[in-house]
Structure formats: structure tokens, C-alpha cells
Length: 323
Ligand code: DON
Image (cartoon, rainbow, N blue to C red):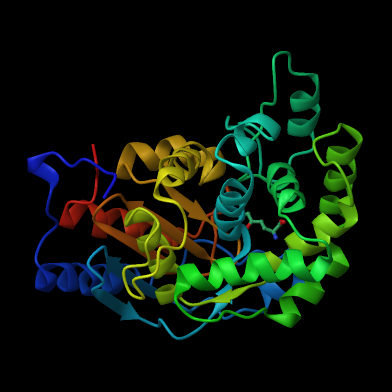
């Protein structure tokens, strides 16, 4: 592994203790009523808010689950992590930092004001690939002669992290494609300012499709565990991305993975993480495990309420905080 672990934190608890932590936390938050499904994408408002699943995959490939890990939600913004990684694989590790930036915006994920500030900034870009403008730009950077080629490479990359062939929730894709005028405006603006070099409409369309990739908690935990395991999927044994690109991906997750609440999140967990408005959150304990929770009701910042609580408790119980 590329990650050096100090002796004090080299081990998480035993498999039995990990499983009891998951069970306890599942019960603790099962009946809470806080939060509300995203509704700015009409299909997301129709998802069952009771779906609640927790999965943890260790870097030695053990899979622990609690609750509903069969029901699928759309991956949404969590896809931004993997498309960012794909761009780094294809164009080198500096491509993201140079073209998009790796700083928190301090604004909402679909802020247009953030684009205005990035455009006016002296000395380089001030945005990141985990907010919509940076993510749409990252999608525009994925190599491929046709839309199909670009799409296939993004979908295959996500599938390799999950360890199974993923597919798209067509209802969510159509619903978001019909209502994503704001993202179309962001794509046009990123093109106008030269961040996106060509085909901004295609970038927004592919970005919208990537957000509709359908996943359950186990898929997401396996994806997170692959990052925890220096880019090698611990279940399939396949090296999915270059290990040397993983630290930069984790750094951007730590900086901007939970948007406005990224600082608070890092303070409580120490874990690089990423949320999506479908209700999923992934978090990575480098060298130890990946964890994911799926539960659609979100807080004001757009992050799943149960997922934040459940991941924080499990990780802190079993020794996931790398600091
Ligand atoms: O572009 C959008 O608005 C959605 N497809 C994704 C947003 C998202 O998941 C923000 N995450 N918390």
C-alpha cells in the first residue's frame, strides 16, 4: 500500500466488532425523521425515503452490511470522484489541478457565482471537480471520439470500482435531463470562459447520465474500499486506477466532498468522503476500509442525514479516523 500507517492506527477492530458496530448504528438511526428527499430532480422525490443500508468493505476484501443493501439509488455527485480519477488516468495527475482547480468554493454545488469568481480569479482556477461546474468540465475532458466512447469509458470505470457491471436508472436520467437547465447554463458558462474546450452540451448530457448510474450501499462501499486500497478493488483483486493518483483524489474529497459542510465533516471523522443527492455517501479510511450508507433524506447542505450520522459513528467506533 502507498499509505504509511502509524502502529497505533494500523488495525481496525475485529470482524465481529465491525459487524456489531454496523448493527448498532443501523438500529440507532433507523427511525429518525430528519431530512427530506431532493426534489429539484422530480424522480428523486419519488424514491422511498425509508431505504437505509450500510456497507463496509475492508482493504482485505471482507464485506459487512446492515439494513437494505439491495435497493438502488442514483449515484449522483458521488460519480464526480470517479470521473475525476478517470481524467487523471488519461491526462495525468496535474490535469485536474491545472484546468479546474482543487479549492473549495464555499458555495453550493451548483453555484453560478462560484464560476464567476473562478473566471475572475488571478493566478489560476479556484474551483474543484466535485462541484457541478468542475465536474461538468471533468466530464468534458474524458477522452473519446464519440459520445458513446466517452460514456462507455466512464461507465466501465465506475463498474470496475464497484466490481460488477453497473447500469443507468433511465427514469432518473430522463427526469434530470428534462429539468437540468441550470447545469446547461453552467456548461455554457464554463465553455465561454475556456474551461471546457469543446462540446459543452455533450459534457452536460454525459454528466447527467453518469449521475443516474444506479448503485446500492454495497456497490458504493466497494468503490470506496478500492480508493482505501490504493486503487485496487479488494473484492475483485483488479488494479482499477494508478495508486499514485489516489492521494490527490482523496485530498479533493477531504476538501470539498460534503460541500459547505466538508470542514465540519472532516473535523468529526477525519475521512475523505463524497455525498450525492440520491442519498448516498461514501467515505474512505486509507489502508483500512471503505464505507457507504444509502438513505435518501437530505439536510440543507444536500447531504444524507442518516448517512452522515451512521458513517461517523461506525468509523469512530472501529478506529477509522486516520488522524
Ligand atoms: O447535477 C446535479 O444537480 C445532480 N446530478 C448531482 C448533484 C449532487 O448530487 C449534489 N450532491 N450532494
